[in-house]
Length: 276
Image (cartoon, rainbow, N blue to C red; front, top):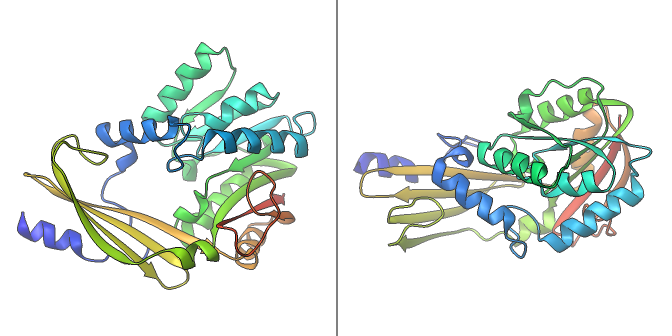
């Protein structure tokens, strides 16, 4: 147990994945869904007021009459997909959380929303020229390794019709500069996000080269210790354009976020609209 704990505290090599898909663990996925559905919490998803403004901006600037078939990549429990469907798009959502997809399907059925949901790793999706518009929202792109970022752009490019567009957002260098390196610990005697039973959480926030950060969580209970890794890569417009151009996309516009705000280098995010 002690050796396992010591090993869990070691810093991993760049982009090393967690040992388990923690978003599908029974307890953790339940906590993540609750965070998604908290309308005032900006963690798993953005606040609902922002999501509403973002969906309206997308409808006005990429209208469903011109871009009817929409793919929401990493759709979670359907916060955007439901809004898109209500605004007139024909929507497909894909996500790799069983709990989120199950919730999304049930919620759409209750509201009689015709949304096509897929429980699948989006890195393995195999759509071909099926969509007019794709969204990849809340900086999920930057959570991927360099190789997987190239792969998801390839998959989305393949899924779009000629002239189809992709809207995605990432964290900016301003967000990277605001990231604080620190190691902290906290005891959860009644359980918490990571475990239902009591546990000790050791959190290690570290900056890696090339504007990458790691939030490493070492979770220790009476019987086990586990390490979970949350990676983020931060971008300049030039860096994001280089990656999207390498995948075959043409840049249409740069924004501060996916509600269409004006870009500034001081923004914590930036958003790109690109075209196949």
